[in-house]
Length: 154
Length: 150
Image (cartoon, rainbow over all chains, first blue to last red; front, side, top):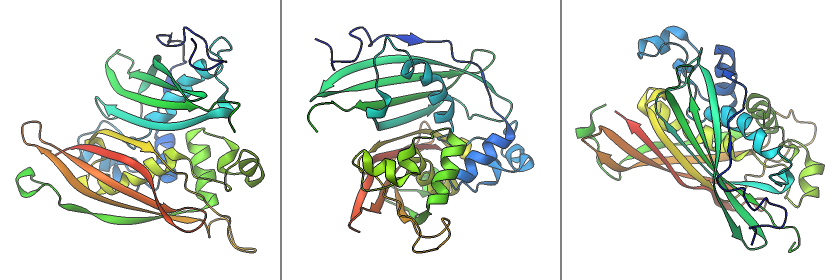
């Protein structure tokens, strides 16, 4: 039985690997840092970042969500997946950093649908985005649980 | 910072983070999450919310700054997770006030929950609260945990 009437029965296990490369710029790191009220000098000042041993400005710990959600668009916009994004609630989030994201990184994210399970009239979808650099080395893993609310019970 | 000088249960401090409508617009632009529930009152109410609410990822991203500033290096945060349990309603400014005023305040406090001498890491658990639409403090993030390399 599908987890929710509209979701594809074979959603769990799908992999989306065609997201465009994400180029991390200094200005995007600064903008994102301001937006989460991150004042550490390593987000804003290249010399401060280098003094800590980083190659360039360091992204805040949750910056990977920008790369992950850009890649998730493939899943959300896939008509065969059947996800109604207007019914999606972000239930939990985890980031594991294999190394810090820094300005100049060229990142590729692959989206894995790890699990889909029924939850009342809705479903909980667990996605995992594996983010790697231009050399193919792992940079970060983002795991999200998305609650797709059921349609009838409200 | 020396792991030997730290102990389980020790506080790393408390911080109050103001969040206004202007902050949510900045986060929407910076993150690319343009969902109107985070900036349009009419839309937010139409989908059953008490009004405009903060992005869960804004709260998660702002809350960890307590840990980043304690650690001294944003690159020291090896792992960070949370559950989003309650929304953070962000009221508009009163009267003709600037959207940079009004809003709400998220309160974050952190304590050391585990130490791993071999890996040279500590786990900091965060308690993150904000008032609901009735003004009652709610835990808005639960199981908010950051693993920090020392």
